[in-house]
Length: 390
Image (tube, rainbow, N blue to C red; front, side):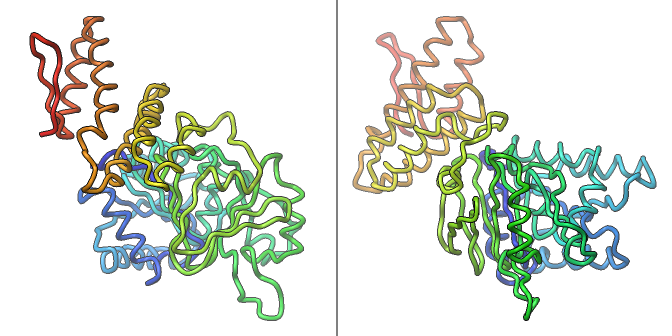
């Protein structure tokens, strides 16, 4: 069961089962809760003779290092060999709260997943609550376009893009080509940065990018953990993430945080119109981030109330709730908590009053029960409605 509908997209440049990633994995599992249903999707390396061994190694890593039991979802070929077994595996994928995929071939994974339930399962997980953790080859597939690494680097084909799943774009509103292994140096005497492309081939591919698309590079043994509810992103591991647009680069080092708005700003791109927005109002959330940074909680709470009023979906109301939680954390002991949260509680009580006026008793009860669940006791008296923190 997911706690508070956490929605996280975690992109790893490599080293997904290395010591450098143990803490990020543990922290994400802790956020999701003890009953998280976790699966590893084996498609990217499904063509390899040692696929079974790779799966068992991955399961053992999470068992030993992250202290979580993770199951395997097997989908290694298309068309499928056994339709009944495949339907069972896809049902397990759709029911998972945490979905992981890693190294292999991005082009093989995309061919295998074409027309399958996999893309919808990933979109649903990031929309409804849970986490998608994709690394290396799997991370490549999540952009609007994808590098066919093996074909270019090993076979020598002309640099080109493949259509990606665009999971990142639909979740964040940003059109990106995700490139792991950004700082690879295996070539020694030749340039293997940028997932074995090198500078010259990357420049060629940049000329072929769809309009409004930038490159998001992720160093090896490094991850970008995006909280889709708040629009914040933490860089974990050992290296950096890099936003590259028209040859310009901006990087964020491990141990630092950024936001989707800041990434968009450095890419000089606007969020796409077809995306499911993480924010009800990007201007309000930017002002909220600034107010919280300066610990101006009074202003932040007023903005939270405004953000909630502007919300037009459950997803956007969840953003307001996430910011309210951050406000409470920022309050500290010296602040009168009752006075600080009053604007938000009063807003909910006003919504409850409207529901009662409209004879929407179930909505009225839901608001009262929700407030009670977070420690706000509401009483209906002959003189009106009163409330207090319990």
